[in-house]
Image (cartoon, rainbow, N blue to C red):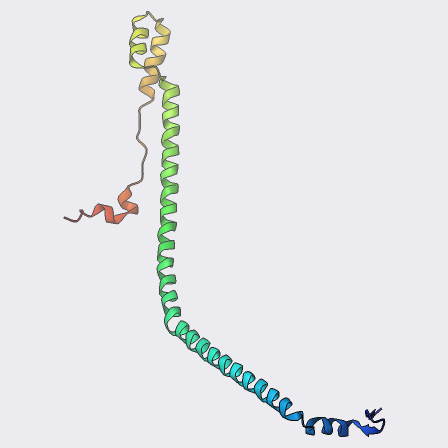
Length: 166
C-alpha cells in the first residue's frame, strides 16, 4: 500500500517516488511554474490589500463627513414633518368648517327655498291664503342667521399677519 511499482517493475516507497519526481531534471520547469504562480498570487494579495486600504479610507470618509451631514438633514426633516403635521391638522379644521357651512347652506335652502328672485316675486303676486302667509313670516322671524365661528388663518400661519416685504 505504501509502495508503488516503478516502470522497471521494482517496488519503491511513496516518499522515494515523490523525491525522485521533485529531483528529476523536469523539476526546473515545475519550480518555474510554481514561482510564477506564487508571483501571481502575491500580486493579487497586494491588489487585495490595496482595495482594503481604499475601502477603509472611504468608510472613514463616510463616517467623518457623510454621517454628520445625514444627521443634519434628519434634523431638518423632523422640522418639516412637524410642519406637515400642523398643515394636516389645519386642513382637517378647514374641512370641518366647510362641512359645517355646507350643512347650514343646505338647511337654509330647505327652510327658505331655493327659488330665484323672479319666481318669488311672481309667486308673491298670486293671492295666497292668510294661514300660509303667517307661517312663512313667522318662519322668517324664527330663523335668524347666526354666522358660525370660523378659523383664522393668522392663528395657524403667524407669518401671514406680518406685513409683506417691501
